[in-house]
Length: 61
Image (tube, rainbow, N blue to C red; front, side):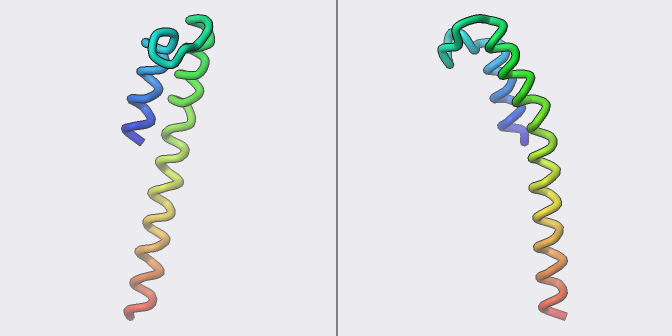
């Protein structure tokens, strides 16, 4: 999740230079999109890890 947020900041700030977006507006939109979805994917990943831990505990018990 942290990598996604850093990637969003890079897309937001340096989008036209690094990623080759045509305009500053397009770079900002991509940065905002990534920044908004990063916590969602992070929370889904944590949920999957908790689910796997619970399944492992159930198998061992």
